[in-house]
Amino acid sequence: VSGAPDPTVALSARTGRLAARLAERDLDALLVSVPLNVRYLTGFTGSNGMALIAADQNAGVNRFFTDFRYATQIESQVPDLFERMIVTGELLSEAATATATATGRLGFDDAALTVKQHARLRELLPDGWELVPCGGLVERLREVKDPGELELIRAASELAEEALRGLLESGVVGRTERDVAIDLELRMRRLGADGPSFPSIVAAGPHSALPHAEPREQPIPAGALLTIDWGAYHQGYCSDCTRTFATGEVSEQAREVYELVRRAQAQALAAVAPGPTGSEIDQVARAVIDAAGLGDRFGHGLGHGVGMEVHEGPRLSRTGGDAALLVGNVVTVEPGVYLPGRFGVRIEDLVFVTEHGGQPVTHFPKELTVVS
Ligand code: ZN
Ligand code: ZN
Image (cartoon, rainbow, N blue to C red):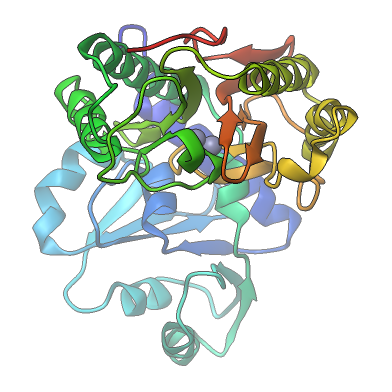
């Protein structure tokens, strides 16, 4: 990517932001053990790594631990911002004994560390050290993307859209849902993706009434609604998008529901901005669907954050959407209406939250499009 920010600058900004959070909680350091969080903070893409981030970035030392298999890889991935340590044996014991002082407060990820690892850590840490549960701390930092991350998410999204365009040109009616899903995933890989960001949903006719439909060995008929929910995983970042198409002439009711969902989505998109909470944005779409008497057919939340994981914070839903959106969040807006036994409609865009409001990353058209 031309003009991409220097990775060391981005990593240093991340550890700096994290250190400020640690200081607020009176912690001396944070032990980071979840691989995605280790990657986010250090750049390391291998499977066996841990990081110890100091709360005082001027006096303290950030350390990174891995084993000999990654000695070469870390030279190019993990910058000097970290003291890089090649460990024989368990990373956890090396990390525990790296704490130089006699007393302190060490944060750990209580959502990820096993009870056994926790006991081992307690045993190895000097007695004067307190272990403080800090699960979710790095995940919350990850909700606010930096410019380099936004570019990677945009690239994943563009790649996924290009794959779908190619797929639709090749034709989908008469092929099985499963064949179309496999073809779509292959196309994304050929365009440079590491794979899909989640198993693609390709669901036609009554099957599209299931929000999490799995592609079947059933041919896609003409004259039905067809929902495709797909995304690319590319250079560590995900995309996520849904479009509902018509495979020919569909019922008046199908077209009405489609327009309703499209209107709900447009209004929710217009409401995306820093400030409102996820549940407030969810309510904007829900009110439109409620007013048409179909509120009970929109059974899932409006959207979710997307980044290194395809489902992450912040959440846009009635429950759990209590955080205000922030500049740098990347969220989906995906209302749906599902009529069991008949059809379902979902329209999903990926959106950057900017100081000027929501900036959709998805370009795929949203008028009900007939595909063959
Ligand atoms: Zn999706
Ligand atoms: Zn989604």
